[in-house]
Image (cartoon, rainbow over all chains, first blue to last red; front, side, top):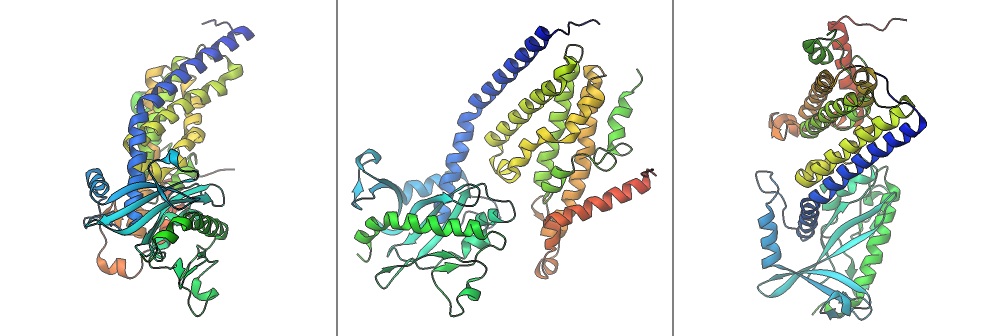
Length: 234
Length: 204
């Protein structure tokens, strides 16, 4: 079979292939977007309730269903916006100079837990997560990290349970002072032989990821401090 | 036809296995084999991508200008891979999270390009498609074997189902198997066993 092999044919052929490929990709991306967004939103909600200390796996080891997640959001959790400059609750995001998202967990009408998003630079990527504090806004109930691009096996360990479980019960506020929360290099017991209730074990091989987490967790805690000050110990 | 259908499907399973004999696609086979379900998803993904890219390239083989051959191949392969990735994200979110970048890296998997260059460019679409399936299955067989060994020894389960007795779990799981060296050991042993069986040796 004789085929034209001139330069104009090369350009034409490449153009056609690129066009067909891009149409295919655009169709796939836009038709699957709804399903993908739903998954991302579900994952985000799952991480909020995980930060609140709700077990996200049943006794059979299966993940809890999406309807169960929605039920927590309907029954217990409400999402509010806070102005970071004044620390006051506002009606909507647009009303605040520095809008901050906050999740409040109510039981029998009383607020028992707070959760808020934490995010910032790790080593390679921006890390996203949630942190939850108790009613006194001084003790960590849980923390999760759900989206990041850290090194698999090293920095990526932040999304593992062993790392996140260490956060539970740590203090961020004690005796009227905001404590500097720290992800140590190595073990807490090595750096602070007398113990330290506002530091967690770092991940070996991921010191820089840990430093990043330390930095942004404290920065985010400071951002919310205006609101926390008004609600602490009431 | 010189290449029979049976040969095209069966050869890559053992005699001409892409991983153990041709030593292609090692990177991904080490990365996704910590447990069976990711290994399975990767196997299905790679098999489909290899088969369909073989089909498309083979259908165009008489028209592709040789100057831009590789670029066209890459465009087709990456389109297919991205579509696969999008589908995984939409319907198998958890799996796609675990496999992270490795779905995207099918684009650079040597098996896909290797089959396009070695087979699809010289053969008609039908048999090329089967060649893709065959090589995908050969890859899958090794992936599933390594994945099974690593998950059973490293996590005491298979596909999430707990297999090993509690006493094995209590005495500390074989952590080495979950890490990269475990994959190297498994794969090395499999290559050794298989090459001994089919009597294929590297000769200088």
